[in-house]
Length: 241
Image (tube, rainbow, N blue to C red; front, side):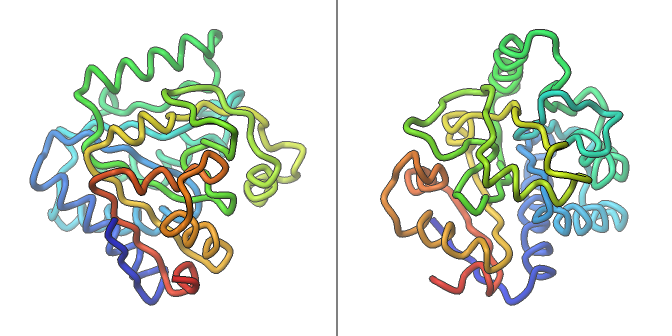
């Protein structure tokens, strides 16, 4: 596991964007695993700048997002498909047919999970997976639990995650309680992983992820077993390292 400490969120965003751009330049038909939330926003902004200046081209790229709320679709400004369109997809030349996000409005959610996993497999797996980390150590929406969920699955969101995400909604009551998420095994099958951590509130989770025991109670700790993980963290998130 490589640890890259940077001084600021802006530097973190630029460094993460460089990883994505390098992947796509070296392999134009890359399969990218993408994350949402506040931490990757700066990264997407930097990637869009790189695209606009001709540094990187997304014409042959296929994307797979980590997760989506159950009950929210593209018309909701809190859905992750909306987030991705606003922050990234609408600003680069990625083909609509190459964008993959779990359908939170699917009539058969279990079948949607199976189909999503099959899409990833048929595409040849994920070349580069971008991750954030929750205060409770979750990756994707894989919450602390007594076991690691392997493949794409339905998640009951942890109370701490609901509280953290409530800042994006008008009230905590509006935050969905269920989501579809790639599983730990899906994530671990990615050829390369880049995890982004920003802010002092992530410091304890980052420390335990790197130096703690590998336990389902801290899902990110499983990344210790992956052969190619880079953690990019700003000074606040790295304060315990």
